[in-house]
Image (tube, rainbow, N blue to C red; front, side, top):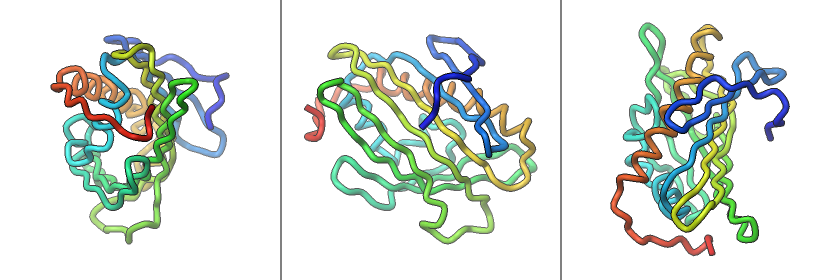
Length: 195
């Protein structure tokens, strides 16, 4: 989905590296952030599937609600993200598809933004784009987590402002999900699709 050649490092703080790059045909840069989290891949799936608590760790997420779920490997949810005054908040419908590679011990979560799944609400501007989470199991209680997105925030946000979020969104999202997973009481929940 994303080629490796032209990523440039924007930030390296608290064990989180944030990269960005220009993508042909898009006005806004892609981002990719990588960190190591102490926890199991099951802890990660549980956190990502717990949409009601997404606003606690998703950067600038105002609200989120599940729209559809198919087993443990597909979820569609709606969320609203805060935009700075005087810009309108953004909304989006996100489809997460979980795929486990048992040989490589890698979980891929493809993120597809479904622009037309719900009618647009005039209070918000609908975002477009795509992305992924990649979780590589390092050991029983450690994983390398990569979060990458190509987002078009829509509307009249100038590219310089949107591109500022290319640094902040991935950094704070990874920092928050890391803190959420590492501070949560282990629930020993196991997902059948992960062996």
